[in-house]
Length: 377
Image (cartoon, rainbow, N blue to C red; front, side, top):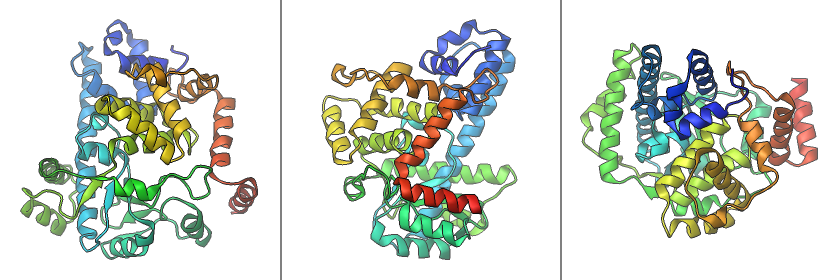
């Protein structure tokens, strides 16, 4: 039984290594992939590999589920677009939905949960009101939680649609306001790229197909929204749905992975970065990435993301990005902390990174007060 998730890393990097796996090896690989929410990605990577019949069936189901998530995410993005049709500012898709809307490799087989969007901070009241009027409602009714999000976080308190049961996170920047780094959200919005008409038409068709799939699965979308989508099936995304620019997309992903959380889901997020770098790489891209990372105060997280993507997934990067750092091994140890059953391991390392995540998010006195309030609750 594998001692850590390097088995999963190796399979994503070189699918041919799975040809030598026995039953125990396959069990470990699939368990790790499910735990890291990479089962759909693994299924996409192994689509051309010779597989045992039982494994082929499992991965075929994973591909179906990933495609369902993709279509559902696109359809939910279009519902948000319609809700914000009267809003004149930019609406930028983030994370998984952005990847599939832009047709990027990072979206292939990717697990997609909530819809994440970025808008200008000064426009939050208008965006919030429009979403509430369109059927979204608050998830966190607690006054302390609501105030904490509004005063200190990088997003509104999460909203969930009362009919579709799908959540949306409305960001106004990409890191908490109390974090030690302060990315330039205005610059990200200014440089965001509108989804091209060709992409929009394909996306809309996918959304409509997603609606059909939802209906066939017994979970139909609201009939009015679905009818509008069907009637508008040949139109691009109207209302200016956008994605971040390529350098900013990498910066955001690196910030999410290394400058905010405790590296939970780190292998999936690093795979996103591997795919983004591979898709965007050009002679001009790398200087642009350095410049934007410096602008967003993310030079260190972006450099670490590039190094570790190269180390784990074999991402092709310029040599001047590959300076070794002594702390990198601890990040690798945290991201690969899974056993052959998919269970978390290396409890002490996990604890250290959990403490680090809170340390990065807020000053010590504020952190102490926050933990005290949450403990009392």
